Each structure stands twice: as C-alpha cells, then as structure tokens.
Amino acid sequence: MTRICRCARTWLAALVLLAAAASPAAAQGKFPTRPIRIVSPFAAGSVSDISLRLFADKLATRLNGQIVIDNQPRAGGVTAAAAVLSAPPDGYTIALFSTSTAISVSLLRQLSYDPLRDFAPVSTLSTFANIFATSVNSRHATLTGLIAAARAKPGSLNIGTTTVGSTNHLAATLFKATLGLDLVIVPFRTAPDLLAAAIREDADMIVQSYGALKAALDDKQIRALASTTAGRAPYLPDVPSVQEVTAKPFDVVTWNGFFVPAKTPPEPIALLARETRAVLQDAELGRRFLDLGLDPKASTPEELGALMASEVARWARVINDAAGSRNNEGLAPQSFASRMSSAEARSKTWSQFPSARGRNSRAEGYQGLSMRPRSHSQ
Image (cartoon, rainbow, N blue to C red; front, side, top):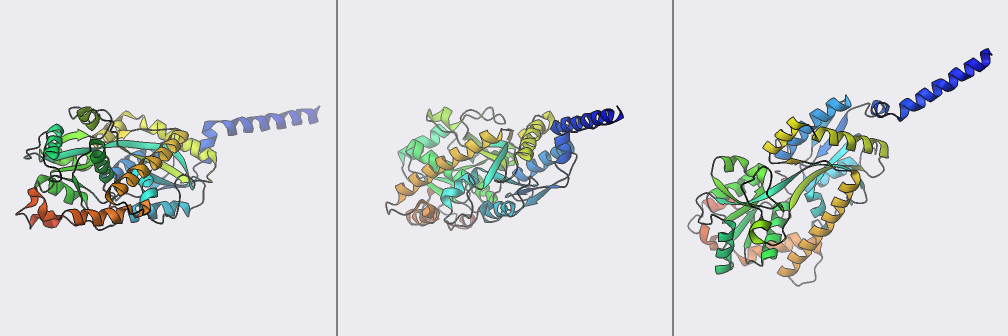
C-alpha cells in the first residue's frame, strides 16, 4: 500500500510539472534567463532608436529581464545583420530590420546574407510615412500645383531625398514613374542637409520621414504637401496622401520589424511575438509613438515573413524599372546605384537647377551623388 501511495505521489508530481511546463508563465520563466540584445541599424538618438528604447523598456518589464540596445549604424544595416547572424540562434540576439533591408537585396552588389533565408521573422514594431514637402515660402503650395509646374516645364524641377537607395529616394523614383513626370532626383548625404535645402528652396520639393521633418513642420519652416501612405497618416490628418491627390495607386509605408537567426527555436519566437503585441497595445506607448510620427503595429511571424517577401519583390521591380529607364545597357540591377549616380550627374549639375542659380555658397550643402552607406536617420 505504501509503495502504491508513493507511486501515485510520483505520478501526480510529474503531471504537475508537465502542466506547469506547458503554461505561458513557465515558458516565460525559461526564457529569458539572461539579457536580450537588440541590434539596431539606426543611429543613437534617431526617431527609430528612440521608439525602440521606449518599446524595450516596457518589454523588459513584462519579461522581468534586461534588454540591451546595440546601435550599429554602419554599411546600410549590413553590419547589424551580420552581428545577429554571428550570435547563437537562441532568441537572445534580435535584429531590427526595416524596409531598407528589403531594398538592399536588389541594391547591394554582394550582400552576405539573405533576409528571407537566413532570418526568421518575429513581429513588426511600427510603420511610418514619408512626406512630400516644400519650403513654406515656395510657390508650390500644393502637390497638384507642383505636378502641373513639372508637366509645364519638364526637367526643370527637382526632388531632394537622402542617399541613393534609401526608402525615400525610391519613393521619389516611384512617384516619378507613377505620374510619368520628368523630375530630377537629387540625393543628399544626410537628413539635415536635405531639410536645409528645402527651407532654402534649393530643392523644389523633398521627401523624408515625418519624424525627421516634424520640428520644421511645427515651426512652419516647411509645408507638407502629401503623405506616401495609401490614406491619410494618423499623425497628419489634414494632409492628403499622394494617392488621394493623384487618383493613382501609391502606397509607400516604411516599416521596422524584429528578426532572429533562422535556426532559432519556435518557442522564444512565439513568446517574443506575443509579448511584442502586448507591449504595443499599451496606450501610453501608442501616444509616444504617434508623437514621433510612428504608428505602432504588431504582426504575427507569418505576416512579417510575407511582408518581407513582398517588399523584396516590390522594390526589385522599382529598382529594375528605374535602372532600365536610365540605361539600356543590360547591366545587373545590383549596379543600379552607381549607374543612377553617374546618370544623374551627367543629366544635371546643381547650378542648372533654376532654384539654385546664384546660390553657389548655399549649394555646398549638396554633396553630389557618390554612393555612400545610408545614414539611417529615421
């Protein structure tokens, strides 16, 4: 009888342990047991960095652990991705990817990794719009007016962006192609250079993330003409979208999302996705994100994987189309950036832009079209 009781107690204890192991609380107890590192391709102090740190603080509280942000804003995000791939695939090292990651697949000649093959998706973090804007003193007070002026004098107007291959640069490229406009795209090396060109009217129009333009918009130094989202952005409800103004399909939403090495077990991925969704439902965090010009948005791993695949294909088409329209040399799409640089440089010099004539000292802010790694100012 005693042996039977002991066996019964043993089996009961085993069942209790199995039930506890299957519960979410137990799963959270197993992971994490040490600090989690999020490797970010964005510079410290950028909008994406600020939002990531706000998120990480709340996630750390929910996980009862520590989260370390590792900023590696070099080589257009390649360095950050490589750092994550070099870590064990255990869920403790996470990459923050963005639309730029999808773009890099077609833009960079020798990318050492494949974001679709070498990484597993976890969840999106946020989305945000780029904004087409002009100086508050510009004669182009609406997007409709600027489009009309561009059609009246083909090749006479320019759009300022950040570096070749950045999301806003390709948004400008898609804008030109969608509307069939002859506009010269002028890339600047940094977001401050781009903003200064808009304020001085050296650039007829610029396109940049709302977060990078918010202070200048609030100070009424520049005027927002349209957002790149399909509908109006929640943080700029009075500004129409390009699609609304032109009645043409146009939707360029930039996103940030979390990825881990491909061989990471499903359990930490599921936990991180679930907790990310919970954190992004926090009302206070939502308000902070909107103040930064970001829309907090969680996803399932499957949804993020599908998004990355569709974005890789989409921007490959844009890059191929842009390369084909400039040169019919049969070159590989990976050489698009260098070809665009030389083609733009040949087609226009800065002094040829009507808005820049007589402003040679101010035009020094224009750094030419040489390829450099993206600064990831957003």
